[in-house]
Image 1: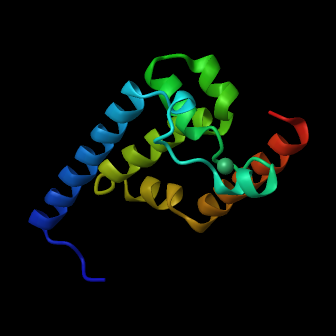
Image 2: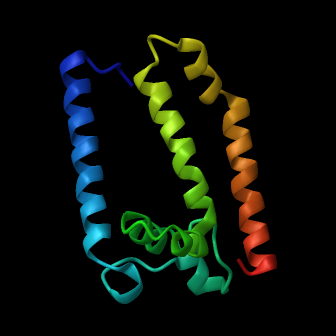
Length: 130
Ligand SMILES: [Zn+2]
């Protein structure tokens, strides 16, 4: 894929931020727990087991209402991931100033660590029922 130019990159950034704001507004206004419009987890419906993302929509709704304990109960990994996503965003924004930091948080080691945490969360939540 060709690298984006400055103008295209700016438009892409605006589109991503606008989509995030719209999504946040939807999850702020509507409660996924009581709405039929939000998608249900196909893995849960098929297996009866929770996937790593189960509860994410309800957790987002709770976080946007600052109900952190409820968000943890719905999906603790999502709540723990929020600061990590902040670090990723900071690394991206500060990429030209701190290229070593950007390289570390986007390294294969970091990606494999995230993968291992997600798989561990997937197993633990189904064994421990959290
Ligand atoms: Zn799921």
